[in-house]
Image (cartoon, rainbow, N blue to C red; front, top):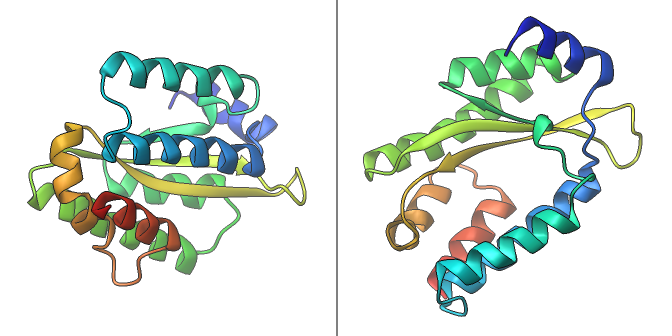
Length: 169
């Protein structure tokens, strides 16, 4: 991240509201569920539906609020610098995401750490975040191993459990 980007982030804060992000992700998850269930049969249909979601959330979910990192140290530093959360919360978050990353790596799946900075729905001035590990392998491979990856942390989140369940169906 350049110095200009850092200053801009500190001054303006995130533009994406948490409630818009959650609805956006729910639609993306629904699309993924349909893909895994075989209800979407072609990459053209998947791309078309993805484009519809992107159009619907244009101006609400801002790509500039999504940050990707080379390693967990960068994620940790970013969270400590740009969020109001303390050492314990940030460390627990990074450990949780590390479990996903390491499980994926052990199964031959490429992963990358990331984090969305968001404005809380209750108060636009408060910042919250959603950390994640992004995977870049084929849908077929992911369907086979995703439950193992998402359930890797000692205490999987409700979102992790939901993803594991729709892979099994």
